[in-house]
Length: 336
Ligand code: TRP
Image: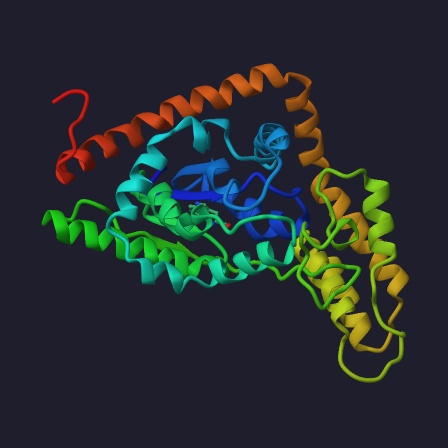
């Protein structure tokens, strides 16, 4: 059934896998596998661009691999970036055809360098952080991806990727690279239940995100303590209540969602009932994911071997691209 269009996306091995990330990315990535040739990377070279703990990077890399597979991504589609060093090699070549000023306009660089500055440690803003979008372009173009499912925050990086691809094509006088399109699918907006004015995120702290792999009793507790409003019948729906409704809908309980929404609109605002329904829905949705994870971690050795093998297979495509690019750019290859 595959249309053989290539879909590629990547995720950094930082932070836990919470519902925001699940609904925003992984749930959609899983579905795309039915229609496309999908590649999903764990980008550990990217994780080095911000201050990080060297001892934790390998465990987090594996943990993310377990979690991705638990969410239904096929092992054959998963790779680890550092097992495919050609990403870095192509990234270097792209650095040499990317304008310095072009990178200075990236808003994510502005935000993240500010974060480093504020972290106050002796942390330096690395030039890796600056050229990060170039490595991202290499991640994408190296596999000739047609579509890249990402959030709106990555739009600028995708635009840069297309510019780099186009520049390269112009330089070598042929349509060598496919210019990838971002795939902005409708994703539910998931806010922190502790502060529904902020996006659910790993960096805000534990109470600001619901971990997919946490035990159901904690999920229930987090939902029970979700911020709602004072329960008055006046005015518009509060951000907290809106978030509970979005969680319910995102969790696939459309009938329950519609019933409770109708009840809310007719003035019956029993947040206890709503919260129970949301907790039930999330627990039910995530149960199979937790079960799959348990299976995977039951034989970590086997699973890790599979990820290494899939990375070796995926690497072949990357090697082919880099070999051709080097030829076109006047660089000597090991053979021919
Ligand atoms: N920059 C992306 C992020 O922060 C991660 C990423 C790296 C990526 N390389 C990619 C996403 C290639 C899509 C395609 O979320």
